[in-house]
Length: 427
Image (cartoon, rainbow, N blue to C red; front, side, top):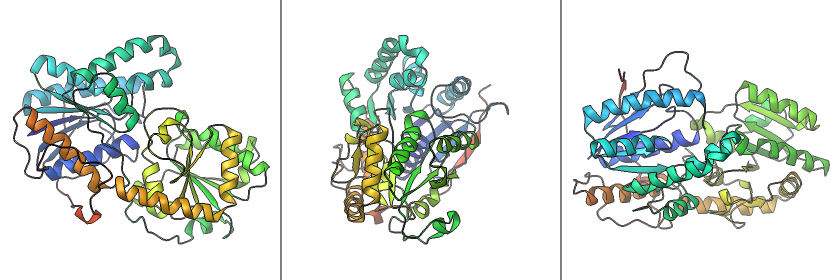
């Protein structure tokens, strides 16, 4: 089966959606399907057999394209559509796998070339656009209709979480296979070395609260700092370490930490490589995701929990749709409630240990690469069966979805190498 993946973002970069694309390409590669992936020009090449990476031919001035709606993204998407149109003509794919706004490109190719598509729902486009740009709120109804038509036109939908699966079901999806995020920690059992405490000159007995991720408003870094300030006002003996963000973000939030009088206990590390995440998480005592908006579950909570550390999350559907108080700490999404939870966890090592053990067990049962591979197999075996195409030799033996709780041993992983890469001009 020939699959054209259209992914409207940089690849590969250490960010949620590109990470999801990376594990999708790995799984499709291991199935033996012929895969062509159209992506932006930015990012580092990844190598997989049976996968050819095609990049847009963009001018040097088009760079640093972040997540979410923007003028830069619109320009890149126009180039991506030209590239995809060329690939449809040259490759003649059997199916298109489209993420985010690329689903509307896929709808065009279905109408003009009769190619079915799978809608990879990493988020709700309608909700994301309104949240990102308040001026677009009057158009929310129109965006919802567009999203509904995209869902209804898809051969199958692949949401990343339960809430998006419910949305797809509400919109009338023909088939749904939820591709949950997973942990990709290289060594979830890594022991702390103390390098971070030495680097930041922190006392050995003082708990470290850590956030890793970008500084987009929906991530709740403001809430984290305000909650931390509240915890410190209650004499919580804890240090805050934040990894991620660009120079401008760090400058902005460093100033905010000064304004909140917690700069002496707040430390900014800058961006941290995803392939060294286990080394960093091992140094923390509490890991946090203070997200305040969105319905999709943030990818970061899965490696957080896999590390065996206590995890503190906002008690919102973005998190509570998949985890509860047995495996992590859920706190109100306001500075006082979140700060109280910080203070309580910092003072209770027994509770931290309990949550860490429960969180790791949850991930190992439901959110490893092996489980993800089974779900991708179920999705694409369904696609093959629906259109009478030949299932890849590496695919599953039946067309039923495998419940996430069944899991597959981690030693089922396969190393993959050898991708071709092209920088394609759509002229």
